[in-house]
Amino acid sequence: MEYFRAAPVRDFVYLSIQIYMVFKNTDIETITSIRQVLSERKQKIVIVPHESPDGDAIGSAIGFGEILSNFGHTVNIVTPNDYPEFLKWFGSELNIVKYDKDKKSGKALFNEADLLICVDFNEVGRAGKLEKRVTKFNKTKILIDHHPYPKNFCTFMVSEPEYSSTAELIFDVVHQIGFEKQINKNAAEALYTGILTDTGAFNHNTSRPNTFKVVSDLMKFGIDTERIQSGVYHNFSINRMKLLGYCLNEKMVVYPEFRSAIITISKEELKQFDFQPGDTEGFVNYPLSIKNIVFSVLLIEKEKFVKASFRSKGNFPTNQFAKAHFNGGGHLNASGGETDLSLDAAFEKFTQLLPKYKRLLEETEI
Ligand code: 5GP
Ligand code: MN
Image (cartoon, rainbow, N blue to C red; front, top):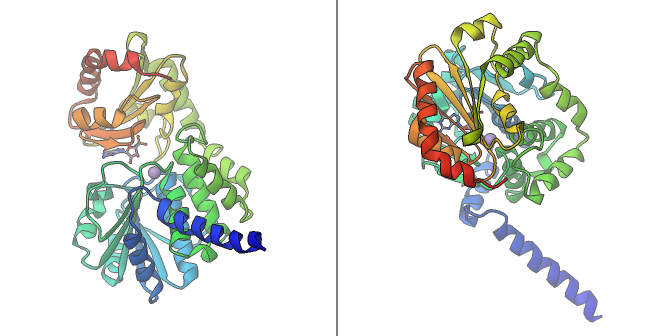
């Protein structure tokens, strides 16, 4: 008898602790407010991912968009610019407007929207060509993101840097606000893609059990993980593979004494290999497969600036490096930035910085 009475009490305590304990930075009031905003009436919602959206940005936008649309909201996604072909196979039929290609539609959607949801970025500048529209939007704005050091540019912010991906975080937010019944296969497929790509196909940021729990829960919606793997990773052009081979064979410079490596790619080289958006995605990870290398850098010459990508192993803080020297930021092990220097000057700057970081690089445990 005692047992039957005790069990529900224990369950209740467990559940109430869970509600308070899931997020480290987000208080219950914020979650309650988001739940209210999203549940009280049907709204016109615009979801915005960061500039040059990656799998997590697009997957989060589509995944959350599908869920909110199933609830009855009118959802449109507006991206600052285009995203790679290998992210264009989703089952979802949500409308996605690329602002740089179709400003008129993007502007109209912003003007009509009741609510703006920003996903996978931590400062408004990362919205690229949509920065001004996001800043000027004067109704409710919600941010859901996993980048450290967020700037406060939204009404409600869910910022949880422990999470592998914004997609994983959205899955938990959806449960916290009681929208889990609205998850469908299209949403699960998109959120899974976000987790897959932000962990480099489960190569990094996978130390928390929750990541795999969420993956397991998403799989219950019948998603085809092998088809997704093929869509993202087995979908490259011949030119992209040749550009990768060229970069590794002819452009990678390794500095074993600094446990670092760099690849630079010029505009001419990109043209030579008929560069398409997304073609260089993942290149920066390759040098980290070399034994003992803990810091990898990719510099790409764009029209008006040089884009830098940084990756590391262990505790080497690429985001601090990006912030201090390349006007950027991001996660500890994966960050980016840009510089107005020429490609040669940026390369030179990087090599001259290495001795300053020698000790930190030497001490990095892997
Ligand atoms: P990627 O190297 O793939 O472009 O970016 C890796 C990570 O760094 C992503 O989490 C991205 O959000 C962040 N990141 C890339 N470029 C920039 C930048 O210019 N500024 C800031 N603050 N973060 C960036
Ligand atoms: Mn992300």
